[in-house]
Length: 168
Image 1 (tube, rainbow, N blue to C red):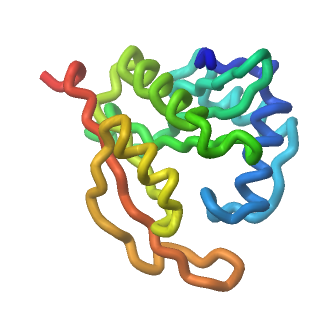
Image 2 (cartoon, rainbow, N blue to C red; image 1 turned 135 degrees about the vertical axis):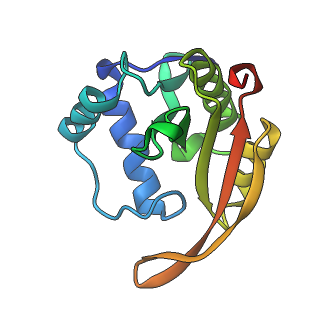
């Protein structure tokens, strides 16, 4: 598997993978499928050459996962913190693609100068939590009843990883 910076040419594959995550109700509170045009607009807003890295993982020429950073907070004191997300094609889950994407994202975030990555993972998404732990994230705590998805309250586990190279 190869992880590389994402480009707008990857928008179709990213859209497909993200929409699978929406359908499966395992990684996002979003409920409406995205269009390629929406993903392209997202690229315009945050990357790929902007401040917030986006990476894709390919296997034999097919994009099988992606990971992205986004703004954590608008206050200047939080400029070195990015939220992240990772999504894996349904048929490639559990095969290391998410770990590869997340590892590539950590490298890109390090180069971009971030000192911390954080996210919220559905409490029952054990695979994601294990992947995060495997690449150095720690579980900080649980936000109970963080939001509703399909009329049901969902808890999320907050994970974070310091990027020591960027802490002085």
